[in-house]
Length: 231
Image 1: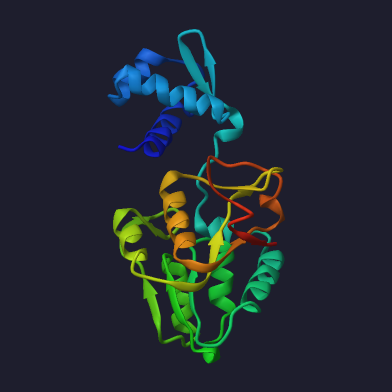
Image 2: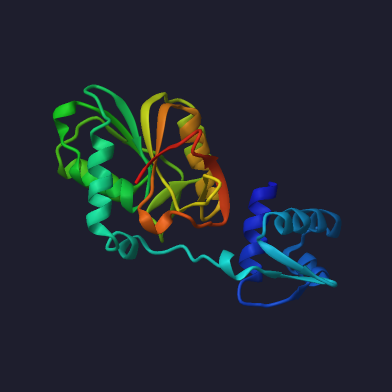
């Protein structure tokens, strides 16, 4: 298990428990104490946990549940439609594009017409459904681990598949943007996919409605130097 995955596991374990002894975390999660202490020091520096004598607790602002897609897609609809229109205006005929999972990406898929003759790759079952309904022919869905809550495809298989692509443009979901222009998502699983998409894109855009600005989430995956925001 890599460091970022351990951070996720530790964060989930600490939710709702208050202060937990380090030894208890080590036993319950079967993480060696030396490794665990190193991880906890890293999480403390990131502001994810507070350290106490012999124990740690999760910082309340980092208790961020992953919301169901049906809930997210029904919030800030007008703003998300405007973001989708701005994103579509940046796409040129015959380009290859990636549309990330998430409610902002969903509205791009919903509004995007087939006349541009695009090659489209996505990691969202909801995006695929909308693109298919709109008459797009050249569409691809990544394989991998299916996240029931978000409808996203993540994991090793999806990351390996992305290495075979080169996108003209990518439109990537964003969960938070802080005052230092760092960009966040809710888990290392989602972050690893987004990082790989950026690597294989000539131009990458982050999709962020106003609720995502001046805030933080669990895992930083980019900065506005790498990801131009559409908001």
